[in-house]
Length: 328
Picture 1: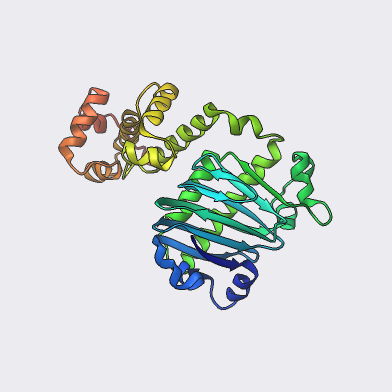
Picture 2 (picture 1 turned 60 degrees about the vertical axis):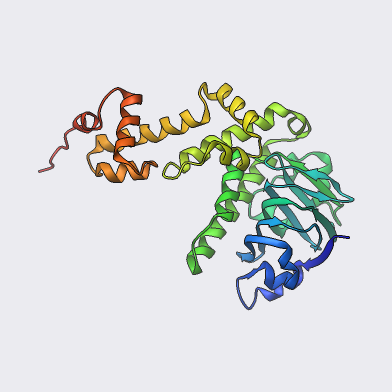
């Protein structure tokens, strides 16, 4: 029998009057031991948005029940899998944003072993229309019913866009503390909601996309390319980035090569060295700093990679920088 625990969002709202965030252990108590947590946190964002950061390894299966009343829930899943009994089937990573509304209680079952990374955002339905610009008239008929008088129970899975994937990654990986952390999480939570609202406003039917394996691969590869461009100082390995975008290594490398005509490792190296060449041409940054900033701890390794890609030495690239005009 899985361990069970329950969280009432109304109770959380009242608790947030005293402090802006709580750890998972603060909320679920001693049962937190079943989660090998890297980051498990509940935070209040703005006035009426609750952010649930989930980055942990499930060591023992558990049944989690959330009491949400008049909240609408967005659940962005990056890694792992979760079942929502009674509402829909298992959700797998990097293919889904799950939206649930007008459901007083719903359950999640996480089975072990399970490396789980997700962001939950809970807010009031009317805010999506009045503050985030959701256009209910553009929604599919079954989704429009969320906003009808009284509302109807609704749960649906949507594609997770590359931009939403990165914003959720930023929330989970946030290392800031204090006021800076609060500001950063607020900005990223707003970004995630804005991305999702735009997605809803621009699409009327997701069924074909959800069932199309090619569309899922395209989203995963696009997300990986964005991660490579963002993390040039510490490029992830092929295995790591495949895991982060929810694919096995072979599927990921094959899809990546088909889209970019080069493997993920070669793509990562090329964009890092192209960035380095631009910095060298500027003449404003020392070579050692440029090398470290694009992931090379050794000057010799940086030099060899640069010559191999561009056919010129680092010194030659630096010599080609444009002369700076002196203003008189």
